[in-house]
Image (cartoon, rainbow, N blue to C red; front, side):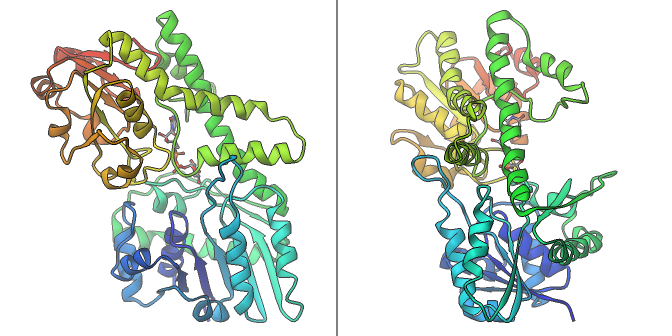
Length: 449
Ligand code: UDX
């Protein structure tokens, strides 16, 4: 008989994980304590935008393989495997807040059956697993195995990333890790059937690598992967500032640099910097965790500082082009931290809009999916537009802060007619510069022109 699984937390990681396990034939309890999120899932909808996920929720509810619940008591006693996918927001000092991680383990512990495997998917600082193992060992009459299996999916491509992962990492006892690997392999076996329901194009030639490691190594693999990607982005942004001063074009530079296979072109796109629920907190989490062990990790402090500087840098660049920001009418397009998601956490577009507004500009903003989520973080006085046309009408300059296709493929002749000025600030370096200038508009990117 197929195993029964509990997934704790219906967020960006937990929801795709639960749905894919359910679609692979496992009876999967999805434990979510937020009533709003739970009700949405029960109606077949995710509380965030993610391509393909609603169709899979709906199907797995129909087959009754997915069982959304707010009750540990209902789900945990029946579970052979428990995936913990709760949030790890950061504390004001940058260290990760692990209260949800420990609460999920404590709460599970109350109801675990005699034997179960607890799999940590939340991103935690190295050493956390060992502390949870101590906690789980308190139940002497039960046998709870613990492994770390960090998640590498990206928001916006969560389903595809989970079905065709670059690697699966499982840290802990090898015998236990093999059992957990069996679950992932079973998702892999079912992936053609799953994608046929949602029409996601499968990547070709994409082998998955499997790593069975120690507990601490698995935790550190996850945090180091995100830190290194953040480092690459901040490196590209540092060179972009130099390119701005020297007339070089950062895109040409990184195309040249990135063809070196030892380096690779990925994550060398300069622009308004990284945002979202992962990179900013994973970088600050790594810094605080290293400090705790007395390890100097200045390289990450520098990466974080460069990232923080980018929205201000872009505002100053625009200020130079416009003489002044005061009284100017400016549109910021893109409030999600990247295209393909409604997630506006730590969004560079929001930060940019707030800086422009603080400097006296009259700012309108628009995002196809994240308007609502961004609202709370925008300064009062900023106008949230419900259409692209409304956002850009009568503006002196437009800032592209997220590379949504509808921004990249804008009809710039029409844009020119709607604007009163002519400056297009490509804060993603994603536009076709010729399309902008041919329409009679002025183009500027980050590290280019
Ligand atoms: C990231 C990791 O990629 C993923 O493996 C992990 O599981 C979670 O964190 P995600 O936060 O979804 O995923 O977004 P990602 O696509 O990595 O982008 C992060 C940020 O970096 C975005 O704001 C993006 O716009 C920015 N970015 C990315 C750049 O500024 N330049 C680049 O070259 C690439």
